[in-house]
Amino acid sequence: MKKTDSITLLGMLLVLLLAGNAFAQAPEGPIAPQPGVAIQQPPPGSTFKVQSVLVNTPVTVRDAKGEMVHNLEKKEFHVTDNGVEQQILHFDLGSEPISVVVVVETSSRIEAILPQIRRTGTLLTQTVMGPSGEGAIIGFNDSIDKLQDFTTNSDAIENTMTRLKEGTSGLRLYDAIATGVGMLSARPLATPTVPGHRRVLLVIAESDDKESEAKLGEVLRKAQLANVTIYSVGISSTRAALQKKPEPHGPQSATPPGTFGMPPPPGTVQTPTTEGQRTEGFDLLALAIWAVMHAKDQITSSGLAIAATATGGAHLATWKDRSIEKAIDEIGGELHSQYMLTYTPMGTDALGYHEIRVDVDRKDLKVRARPGYYVAGPTG
Image 1: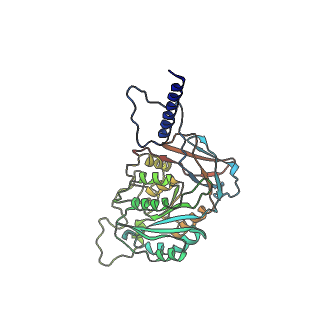
Image 2: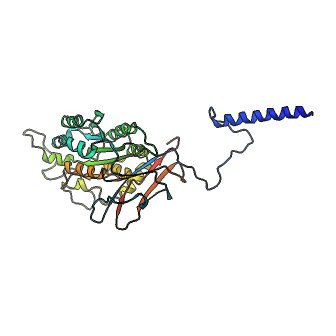
Image 3: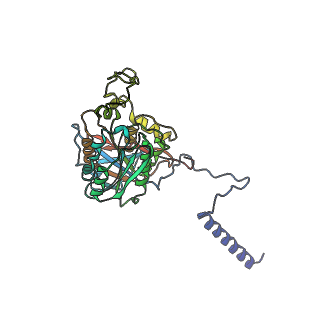
């Protein structure tokens, strides 16, 4: 072969090689393996980096007396994702603006409590939203009603709450939460340098759900990936019935006055406070993780407490000494006193459940943060 022919052949091979590399960088679709060629496997023990997920972790720190601690520094926090310590990209204490969706039950079941809920508008704007926040309102019963889109106008939020109308007896709680998560997910995305608005879902409702199409675990997966923190104010239809004035010609109760139609939980005595105590004795963290891991299964009790635990929020019942107004005030105070830690997960498997752990260097402090998040594969 002549020298010139060799040079020409070498040039053609180089062109073909470069063209092949160019196509490999941006394939049009799945490339079928060639017969007889083994598929390349990742090296043993290798891990994928979750570079597309930006995790915001609100952290509540309290001392032995239950008071919020406000003097911690970034260097005192340690965040691990599946046991791997992460670099904190952003650190803030209570100054970030909040985007909040208020999901409020408007069913006829809580007719006697609805006037109390209507009076919470000012608390929502001043204590929860704050001067730089924005809010939206969803009402639900048999239907899911977007009563107010996102606005920074306090009067609009307060007027919407004041005009809440009683609906049917339905209770599509999980569908309402799913709608709220969807609204928050559409807010501008945060970046490693600009965290943006915090995404908060505040639910004022009973913990039961009836006839929702959405499953709680599936909704919580989406909430976790969208960095939505769920807080809930638990109300009681039993309490509403006790507060309701008796009707002169109402239907007769199926059970004698002071008794209950359903048996109490094993080993307990049925009282009006039983409803607010049903989550006691259960490991809510384990239930929350189970709900997320089994996204297609329906959770039929303690839904609000599980949702709050799974996303790092809190569930405040109003059955005993805490009023609805007091519960909202407590939530607002916590939201604006939390540390916000942001990181991009590195050194951990991309898919599956990611356990988050937050520790501080000081002793005798109680730290609460979201327990984790779930990244599903293509088939979920």
